[in-house]
Structures are given as C-alpha cells and as structure tokens.
Length: 212
Image (cartoon, rainbow, N blue to C red; front, side):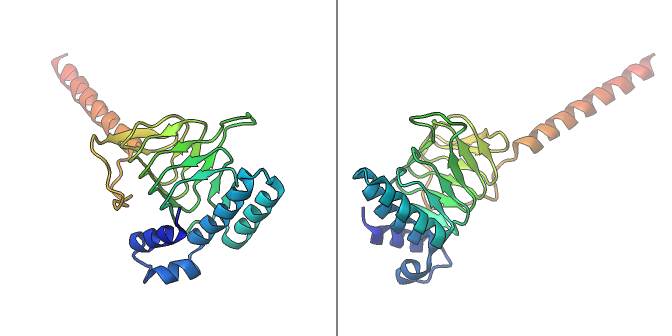
C-alpha cells in the first residue's frame, strides 16, 4: 500500500490542505499511518516488542494510538486525529474517514477477535465509540459522539447513545460525502412524536369534558 496514495487522499479530502507535501510534512494523521505501517510490519514478523516500540513512538508524536496488530486498508483519512484509539483486532477497510476522539475498542477482557471490523467507505464522526467484535457495513456513517455496540448494515447512518439506525441508503455513499451536520437526531424525533401524541390526547380529553 502506497503512503503517497494515503497522503494524496488526505490532501484531496481536507480543504485546509494546500498540497500533498504539506500533508506529508505536517499532518499527524498521515504520520500516525506511517508509524503504524512500520509497527504492523514488525507485528506480522512476530517481533512484538519492536512493534510496540514503534506504536508507542507514533502515539507520543501524534496523540493517535493504533495497536500494531490492527489491520488498516488504503486511503485512510484521519482528520485532526488527537485521541483516536484503535485496538489490536480492529480492521479498517479502504477509503475510510476517522475524526478525532474516535475509539475502535473492545467491551471487556475477551481474547481473540474483540474489536470492530469497519467496511470500505465508512465515516466515523468525532468522539464516536465503536465497541465490540462486529462489522460496520460499507458506506455507513456514524455521527459524532455516538456509541455503537452492535452490527450496522451497509449504507446506514447511525447516531445517538446507544447508536440507532436513523437512515439507510440502497446506493453506495460517495467517499467525498463528509457532511455530518444534517444527520437525523433519533432522540429529538422521539420527543416530537411523543409531543404530538400528548397534544392529541389533550384535545380528546377536552372534547370528552365538553360532552360530559
């Protein structure tokens, strides 16, 4: 996998980036991927101490913690990145986007597969937590600060705590679609529904009182 391709992808997706050279020299998200590629190489060679050494160096310099055992596809876009944690058995597909504060973690001290698998073209908003050994389907979007604890079908938008599917598309979500502002709010939607139901009950009670 080409590091230059990773840097080029970041420059294309981030409007603040002036060129690819700026990404290579100054972007912590790109540096974290470089450190991880080195650490993952040693991990695959079963040189675990060296792998953790490079992983910890990457964490020290970038504020992004990626376990050397995590599998990361091509063109991962880490925007800002501070506070991101990616666990040992996590897997991330191609063309994904992670914002700062994202956690791809486990839910206990289980052994084996215990971290999520993220499909291609997935966007995970700032502060979101995806916890457990399940799959987030390709083309999905997870809203900021959501907590996801169960499998997500492909092309699904999830928000809230715990995360709830609020929108599902049949077509592939474009990788350039980074809009997180217009995501539905399931809690507010439920409040509106309850408010409308209460209004109907109050009107019905008034009508019954008038009849009596």
